[in-house]
Image (cartoon, rainbow, N blue to C red; front, side, top):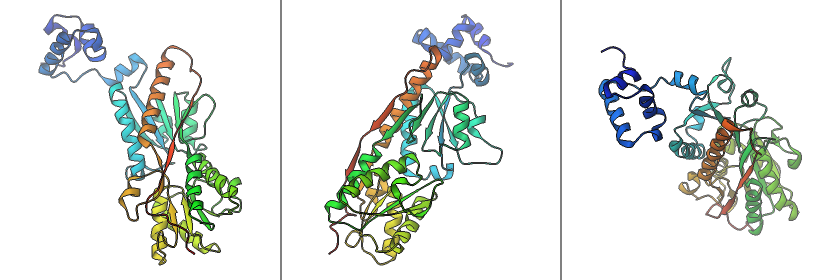
Length: 353
């Protein structure tokens, strides 16, 4: 037998070619029994399905959305928060039939996936807004949804209440009597090391919102923190280096507020290597409620964000934008804010006398 086509199947069953095509692309147009019969015959004849390239040309769509991330794929696939986020996206996408394409914003010589990869729309997740990758997605005029990014005109954004959560974390250590407080953050660009004025430092959206939340509470209590910013890298290594910098920057803190749980874990390793007890000599608070917060010891006091809800909400927003793009101009962009919650565990205790 030669190459099996839609017409081959249609001739075998005695229906039109369009009817066979509908069985694959528009199943709601056929009765269940007829579609089952067509699919059975197609399998018997060894038909592999419509050519994806031809179908994309005919429909003007690719059947895929992109997920642009700031980190390398190797790091992303080992980070538990990022993997929870990706899992939520794939689960929410499953009923739509859309595929997910992972795109790294990390620069590669001559390779810009955000410019070159075919996709119908994209989620932009915690990226440096000045990166060429974000610029290319914007210039392509694809439907976009920003996640953990500064809201932009005309683009729906999904964020968690970083500022409110950080404020709760700082209020918690203040309630325990801590007055020597260190702040540990990271990111792309800007100044590194001890920050002379944390409130005016050049920070990315998530960093700036958490910094503002910590300072809201500390300023109200007239507590001046020591804030350290370390270049972007492996979070636990960054946390370790950041804690060393805090311990060397004058009077050591009795409490550390960390940008993430991974940073907090790195900080705890550094403190323990220095012979300091957590939480009896230094309390540590993270952010995210990463699985490591519950798994490692001491169990980490942290700010919980619902990463699963964030991923699902982002997909719903993007699929709605894709539908709108088919029939009418983009609607008004929305800014969705998801709640955070302080979770008190074993890494915080009253300030030492």
